[in-house]
Every structure is written in C-alpha cells, then in structure tokens.
Image (tube, rainbow, N blue to C red; front, side, top):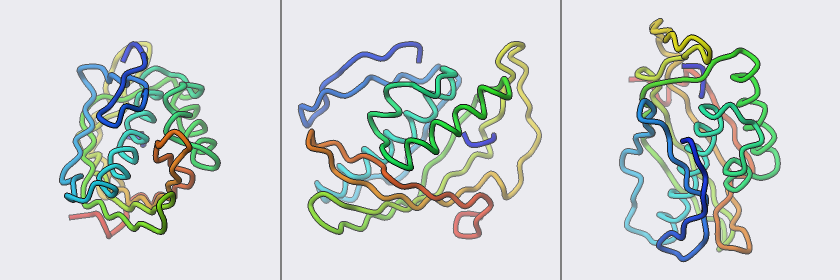
Length: 177
C-alpha cells in the first residue's frame, strides 16, 4: 500500500469528550499492538495518536482530503501534509484494502500539553485498490512497507491530543524485521 466508514457522527469517549465516530469499512483494519503503557496520560496520548492515523485512513477510503475527522486529530503541518497525502490517493483514483499494523510505540511527555510519539507501521498486508474497478494490486512491497513515524502532539483546550507535526521514514531499518 502507498501509505495510506461511511459515516461520521459525534460520540463521547471515556473522557467525556465529543469525538467523531470513525468507522473503517470491513475490508480495512488498523491493528494497534501494545498501545497501552499503564500510565493514564501516556495512554491518552497514544490513543489520540492512533486516532490521527485512523482518521487519515478514513479520509483515504472516503476519498475526502477535507474529512472533518482528519482536522479533528491533526493540526498545523500535520493536517496540511495529511490532506495532501489523502489528495494523492484521490488524484490517482485509488484507495486501499487490508490491514496496517502499528507497533513499537514510544511516548515522551514534555509537559502537560506537549508530547512526542514514535512508532512503526507494517503495511505488508495492505494493498492499493482502484477506486472505480475495485481491482486490488497485490504486488509485494518489500521493505518499503515498513514506516517509522516521529510525531509531535499538543493537547487542545478540549483535551484532545492533536498531532501537529509528523515525519515518516518509509523503509526505515528501525521497523523492518
């Protein structure tokens, strides 16, 4: 997959914050492995960092770079680059199908409103799909299917940890088996 449901409605999470409901289609799965630390603050940061990834995937499958869920979990440079990434899928007439595995997350808290999260993705089971025909490209992706992410998050006034900066390194040996 080049990385990267049908409705969005507000739901209240455990924190009581109204959040968009991001429902991926049945053929798309985000698999977050070991995204709990046992620390309440770090787990909240990780949860929202994960929501930012799922919101991006949601925007890709919907074919909408202006998807409100994307802007809910991303701001600043991360929002601009995320929308541009989604636009590239739309312009190429593709979406994707399959599973993206998210693993090896690390959280660094800088203050009560600032944190960094690094993590890896494995896209070996995710494939580009032609938006019109539904044809899936199952070409093996090799080491490019592993991506290292380095993100910065800032806590909003509403208590949402929003990704404000994101740098990715496709094919990073930090993530390849």
